[in-house]
Amino acid sequence: MHKNNLKEEIIRISGASPNKCMKCGKCSATCPSFNEMEIAPHMFVDMVIKGRVEQLVMSDATNHCLSCFACVERCPRGVEPAHIIEAIRVIKLRQSGAPQITPAQIASVIDTEIPQQALVSAFRKFRK
Ligand code: SF4
Ligand code: SF4
Image (tube, rainbow, N blue to C red):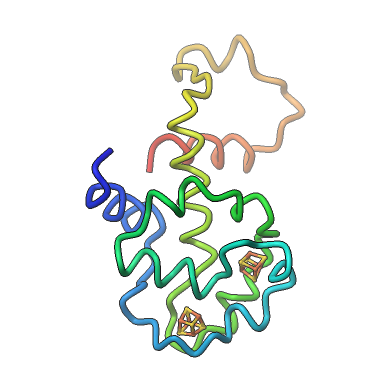
């Protein structure tokens, strides 16, 4: 995917507003995984703004995000860095060619103990 398209895809999937960022660094200051992430939350946001998205997708920083949403709560501008990270996870998952099933196949393979939220979450990873 062309990097401009990739940037637009990250923004579209995440629903985040990176251009609102005022570079205060509060998201990174509150992040419990700051020391483990090679690209901290405020850097994530800046890289999306500048279109350095291929490096972002290649990074393993998303593996260290705990999805605690502390950065979302702390951000004074409503940028929502965690949603950017989640969008990158979704893009990586789609690029990996993870196996998919059609709606018609669900009934035959479903574990009836799976919570409905898990099904909806899995569906969104491939559809949003
Ligand atoms: S959601 Fe991820 S990036 Fe945001 S504060 Fe939590 S661990 Fe850090
Ligand atoms: S807290 Fe919000 S405004 Fe501040 S650097 Fe992070 S994303 Fe930007």
